[in-house]
Length: 75
Image (cartoon, rainbow, N blue to C red; front, side):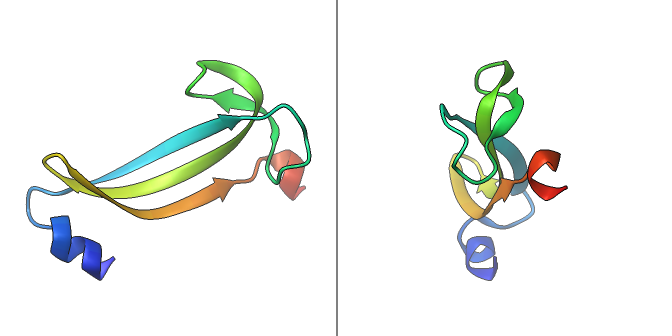
């Protein structure tokens, strides 16, 4: 995070939190479940990841990417 701050940080930098869905046909990949897929605009069988990106102007630096585990995987 310190390196990202040095590259694109500053008063005009923004922290972007976003989700990315990867449609999947099977059920053997970790986290795959019927859930809302923002890329498709509907509920579908997919994996969902949450990303944290630091950006200034048109320069983004991804800081973190985590797999979201739906209740069906955690309960």
